Length: 236
Ligand code: FPP
Image (cartoon, rainbow, N blue to C red):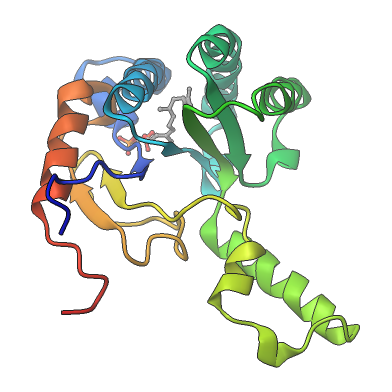
């Protein structure tokens, strides 16, 4: 163990409970998502403050397309607003933006905004903010398997050469270290098809609060809990 407890290098968050937060207040679900976007801003700043290098947020799952059209539209509008407003912070705070998921399924305007910010911030090095959008881990893993199988079928790749490193290099998170800490809000104990390969050794911290109530001190508490646990990677 290091003399001083480490700050997790990579934090991944399943932001859950926006709908229930709104429901408790008699507000439409979109108001929960709007308040949730505020938590995203605060947590991004808090990560920079702590010296976390990667933050991955589950902002829209592949299953979320099955929600009512009006809710999907409101979420996309929020994302557009977030990307537009956040652009100057990404420059000022030296944040690199990345996205994982089926980005092609996003509306054209959102995709353009996203791609241009990803391109513009590619050289930034303070924090990498990864947005999981239209993301599903099984899809990601299936896609990686398909690309390896295609290379094997054409003789470009010897199947015996496939190991976990090579497999990981075909995932959308290639080049991004695995999360050290996975946080889920609203008390649910599920991983919901999020980063199934990458969270193999992550510490999980479940927070009872709904995502819109998640603040800087909640992030700090989760990090303290992470530091308290002895990380052994399965060894003694
Ligand atoms: C889960 O709450 C949250 C989502 C489906 C989307 C997360 C989106 C945001 C936090 C806002 C926009 C994101 C960015 C990056 C600006 P839920 O609707 O499943 O809540 P419930 O389980 O209480 O119904």
